[in-house]
Image 1 (spheres, helix red, strand yellow):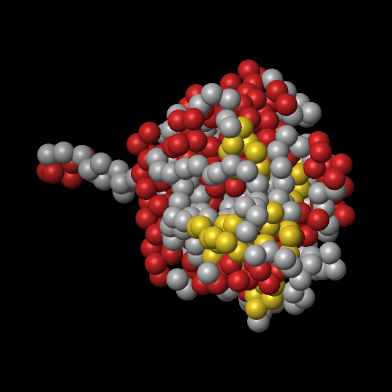
Image 2: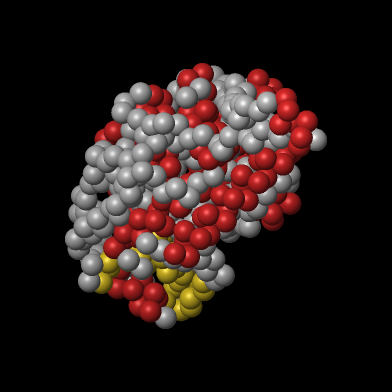
Length: 447
């Protein structure tokens, strides 16, 4: 009942009558749905550490940027903060409840009907949001070239761990250096979109939650979660619907970049574990990376580049004389060269980023709060994905959860609390989905 008491303190007049669990990122938040004496529901999210608290502060900033006019144009509801309460360095948030429920990925796919159509429509609505709202909120913004360069920098950092299979480094670097792939129109991006942030009610998306990573960047990032969908037709319908409702032309390389993002999220998870000196997280990331490399080697993996990856050259074997061959009775086979990583990759150790300072906030109404996220950042000093992120320029997946791999549904290392995807679809047939994931490569100085 602790969250119920916090809700009562945050929202004057709220008299809790019942509490039920709510699914959330268990490593970062404690969440619940509180029912008051009038039967109204409220969602309560309490951060477990300062970094998670900073994410909620960023979300507050984002939600305030949704004016009534903007909200009215969206095909779904956006939560609003009803109140907050301070507890030491951490601040608990109470949100007005939205109707519906989140569904597991398999259940979401099994729903069928209009669900994938409505998901595509909702994603188009997010990406067509006015970019001015992001600029006014001083949130991260990237051009297409800046976004690609950021990924390259992250790849360099991931390579320094020495724990990523060389074949994956080559694969990711090849895709990042394929400039044709990165000619896209930046848009507003949710930044942490997946099934747990889609509220479904009566066969439609009633609300979208988890707005901690809003930015201007690559819309493909919001499609990465669909790479884990094993039912190809579901993902195809989402993409077709998205292209139908978007106001921008069709992006022919959208799903290639989405597949890259899904794979690369594993490298981001590894880097986060190294920075935190978390042996369990590092071991988990290494295992997922090895599985991904094995899957790609055996089945080819999802196409993430418009150009075929060159096959590493095999160096010639040592010279031998004819007599020697005759004496041996056979000729020695040449030994394949070890996979080569670009010469630009350095071996500098990853230094853990200093923890961000938690903003001080007053308890009570949110209207007076004017915290601002710091846009300045470099490298991977932001927590991965949808993850425990800083409110600075961020484009990784959620920090508390590694992205989905090709053959497995994405889950956070720490299981979620039980209580608790522009133009016409046919124009992007070459980007059909497959289940795979995303990465980055060698160090470089501004490319």
